[in-house]
Image (cartoon, rainbow, N blue to C red; front, side, top):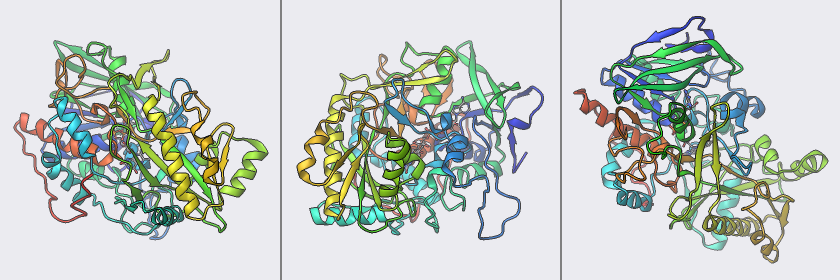
Length: 538
Ligand SMILES: Cc1cc2nc3c(=O)[nH]c(=O)nc-3n(C[C@H](O)[C@H](O)[C@H](O)COP(=O)(O)OP(=O)(O)OC[C@H]3O[C@@H](n4cnc5c(N)ncnc54)[C@H](O)[C@@H]3O)c2cc1C
């Protein structure tokens, strides 16, 4: 046991626990609910499949606060990510990156903080969701001020090139707020901040929840829920060892009030499907991602693109509409980028020597989920009961993906890039606008003809009032199961069209309020002053 967290890998006997609430998943949504329910006085138990990330007992000021975060990509993907960082869609076409550790995605994310897109909220309102920018404002403010979120204007070289190119082209490029605090610009957000400077769940929500009496079990994978009489009565989980293998012992939880599902937009549908809770076969359907297009500029001077704040510059210029996209700048994580090139051997070596020290990276998150004729993604179970995402890129998204690559290539060239590398198979290098026609020929519709990845997974347990479509009611309960609340990104009826962590936090606060009030407990928002408010009306 460390800091009130029990590591399942060290448990040697079967256990049974009877908290009031059991929260499954310790990521963005799980952390918020753990804090707010514990603060209200409930007996709260959090179960997390991934490992604990303890603080080192002795701190020497300058060194890593959590030595477990080695900053070595290869080790960290294996330790902190779902499927060791190699999760892909069923046809192998899209790499899907999700956290699998204490704090979930918040521990490994790139710290970009945007409010929800107004246009998306307006669409959701037509499906019966109760959120708009005004009603969400106190919850968003709470997130901004509690974490806090701030404008970090130390730009890495990718952001500088983006600024230069956008300026020359007259494209608006602005600061993207972050939840970093006194960032040391090591560039390692994606493999866990070793200095505790990113205000993730393991720094904020979860320690505060523990201080209020919540208990957390890590290395504890929930297998299924058992229903009787229309309510969830029991949760069955297995402890995992350090290599994520199942131990012979496990945990049975019998919550006296209810269960909160916060296992993420693939994990939550998977638990429901394993439990044979399918809500008219709707669970897992309409799962959304923001597919990401990437291109890497090759510059004359060394750029050292792996360092600096990864994601604090963006352009909303093309963000509107059902297939809008947000251009953002990133960190050129060498292992991740090398694997995304689809190259190997000598050619990969040469490419990395050329594009790694001299490169700058730009990418675009694409909005999906607004075309009623498209199915988008479906979470299914494989033969081992593990989830698999079957996802088809929609035609209108493919069109926008080609456009974003053309726009970003132009920004690179205007910023002085000698060439721009596209992660196509075979690779595509453009040197002038005359080469752009090739971008239009990229066959995104054929898996593995281009690298597409996503770090934003949403949907699969849609909230709404339409009986044929919705899985979750507007009060966050699962349809027909009043003691089961779903609070994570799986409730999104479409892709958000913005980096989702802030919206997930805000909606989890909203859900916590409903739960507290329903059970006669106090709920308070305590951080309503200051911060980067107001955000752009986006
Ligand atoms: C590399 C990366 C970069 C990102 N960058 C940004 C960014 O800059 N800005 C932004 O807004 N968003 C970013 N995101 C996305 C953001 O972090 C996620 O959208 C958010 O964390 C999702 O919250 P969630 O609560 O839905 O699920 P998660 O945060 O994914 O939490 C789910 C948790 O449940 C656990 N779990 C799953 N199944 C089980 C089970 N059966 N039993 C027990 N536990 C289980 C998982 O291990 C995980 O810890 C990024 C994500 C990644 C991966």
